[in-house]
Image 1: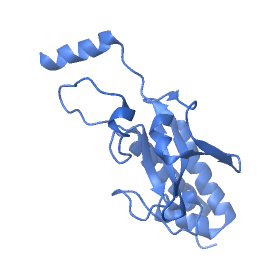
Image 2: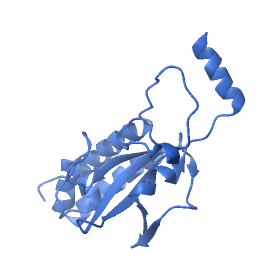
Image 3: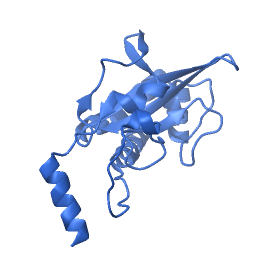
Length: 186
């Protein structure tokens, strides 16, 4: 074995920490807040934008947003999280298990959930998968009633166009919104 298992564990923890920071990246404050239309009327938030509920961590997409690593397709989807994840997946089953366990443990400790998604492109006849991270501290409400997806090998895969709807932000009360509005104008 050319990679030590301690190194693999450290990579998993480091990548988990990066995924946590990515999920918890707050939405930029754009000043005065106006009444927002429902997300479905306005379109889904961009997974690359800070503050959106689900942030795309890695993907099978060939062209992705800046900062999203796209690894070789012969790896498990989690092996596309970083070049070190790819090395761990290729090294051995033990190395991959240690990497993945330390990665997931880091997410769980930070209350960040990992979502697997798919997108079937009818024209190109491709089945594209992605992993998203969601900060459960900011988006604790699971909206599983109207999601489209399926279960494969014990894992739930959500249709990618529904991933932003999977978690909903808590709506502040009218009093909280008014307080925030008066704080910004004074």
